[in-house]
Image (cartoon, rainbow, N blue to C red; front, side, top):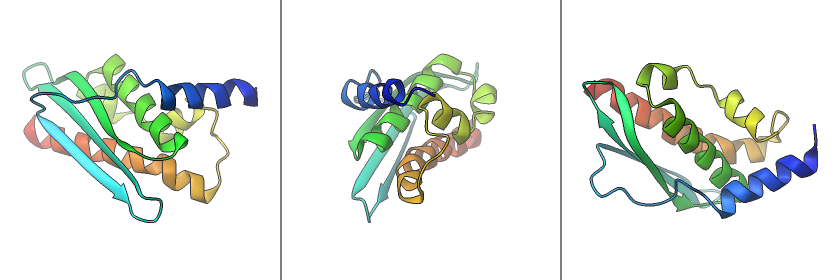
Length: 130
């Protein structure tokens, strides 16, 4: 595992996110906050219930580098997979592996888990409407 590579990847995703922004008419928005770290993330999607696919995804928020890199990676996965059935199979460990965070301290895990909890909230709402 090349630590410098993963550190650069995490910083790049946090500093230059492709999926950060606002959707004008999202179908689902989930927002969560970690009061201890003062991190706050929101994930918004537009959804086509006929095809059961996500059409657009954007996130907003503030937080540490890890929380922003994780939510950006999740948004990238959503944009790539699109299908609700495929997204249900996604695991947090997959996201952490992409960022080289297989071994993570408990305090940093909370940072990573915030974005995951937002994603899970979006999935739950999409299941309800589909």
